[in-house]
Length: 162
Ligand code: NI
Image (cartoon, rainbow, N blue to C red):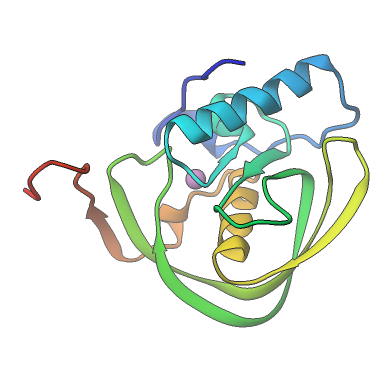
């Protein structure tokens, strides 16, 4: 268990295409553990491989729901189903900012879990948004590419909003 350095916007690793994971091994199990530790330590709800410098199609998600979270998504493929949602989004790789992003409301995602079993999940609301955001990371896309009306500075808790 360890907390890894989170790469921030401007680091070229965030703009690369990730390779599919072919097999689970001890290093990947350790990576997944570290990604959860890193995400929770930063109060995030999702973290993708490139954000810790690993160009593999792997992300972890915990939006604070019950089942099916916490989620490990390996080689995820998102299929839009219906609807749209517009809401605020932030990213651990773009610290101190948030912005409005429109995404699909209802999606299906096919992925492998940490046991490399094929899984399918339907999601809407925050979980759907989070899955779309993290899957974008695996293809070099940041939410800042999709933001409407620019980024808003977020003030850390306990500080004056200036
Ligand atoms: Ni992000």
